[in-house]
Length: 404
Image 1 (cartoon, rainbow, N blue to C red):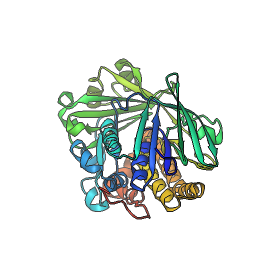
Image 2 (cartoon, one colour):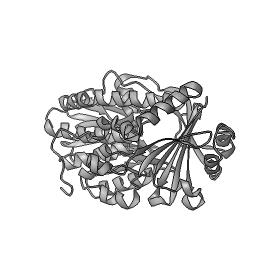
Image 3 (tube, rainbow, N blue to C red):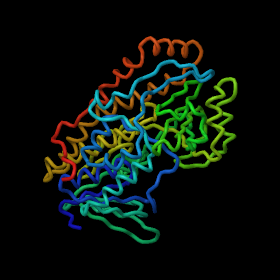
């Protein structure tokens, strides 16, 4: 593969794969390196708001996703102790209002669709089982050294994109070691077969249960065949893994009877396997870009999961980056700085909003009662309208034409 238009991408997650597709549509070649032997996500759902599905449509991916996605009719917010409704936030008119749908799906389905689209592009190379170790810039671009087992894999290109998550090695190479800070909260996730779930939990809705020092979200995935469940509570466990096994008894103990409705506890009691990860946050680096190297997604601006925008921001980053590089292909350092300037303020604002939601979700007592009153008084439509600035976002450059 020629290096004159080759961009190396570290990480084959949602952001990295989207970046590869967007770059290929702009005439670049992309080499994607990922340490995983197989690209798969276990037991994880994902929410794709209109700002994300709009870009996936422009990249020609939505036809693959539509049969696997659910368009939820609403976000239903409920009190943890008795299941009474606080507010219902409508979503059924998102496509009409924002020009693109709001979808929920299994993360693995999204990743599989992106992988399939990448493999159809002759200018995209996926190198799995290749762990990026070091990189260096020089007059001709960037050289990346990765290891596949005991064997070295060298890649050369004109630029490097770090799409390798919150523990990004590429970010460390730019700014040095500044480890993420744990939030003293842990998330547990599982998939429940829909036919085993209580009937009211099979509805095409996102349901959010708010309780003391914890909350639970669930929604259908895999065309309604399964229910994705995420339960978040205060905890001191701090391992860095994304897929550590957890006993069902550990989850049930975090959401005890009396404080949590039997209806949601019935749902929590179904899975015989849970995966957990410790939630961490990290401020944006002083700079995302250095020479011909830049960052995107959680490598640049890790998102707490309380606004469901982590994947969406990575998808936006990827699209904008491809545009900026295509506008100034002979000066990638300048193009990357423009990309960073485009994205920094918006992603920081989303980070703050997600952090704020995380605090509000865990209110209890008088604070919780005040929160519930304000949400009910505002009503679902007004609450959703507060996020128009997220959902209405459109890239300011020329759009791709699917199928190009």
